[in-house]
Image (tube, rainbow, N blue to C red; front, side, top):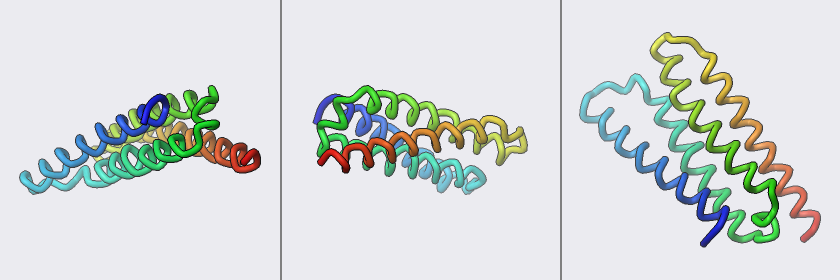
Length: 123
């Protein structure tokens, strides 16, 4: 695996590693108040990123396009915004960051959808 596929995979692996450490911390401390943010980190950061990694690996024509690079950048930005944003919501510190992260993450998924549709038509 290389290129954009590797980029998505590495982001996913770093995310799930952080998520595992976070989960262990919650279990050890008995404080599960940030569990929703932890779950979003694992879902968005690992599951979706890994799916994208394997998609781009298996559809090299899609991986070569500029849209794939934009997808990676937008997806990472969404994750970086939404996870701490959810923590802020849970701590009563406002929802602006979580809302922004939600919209950026949605944009990343729409980019992925367009990519998949464009490449399905060309296959």
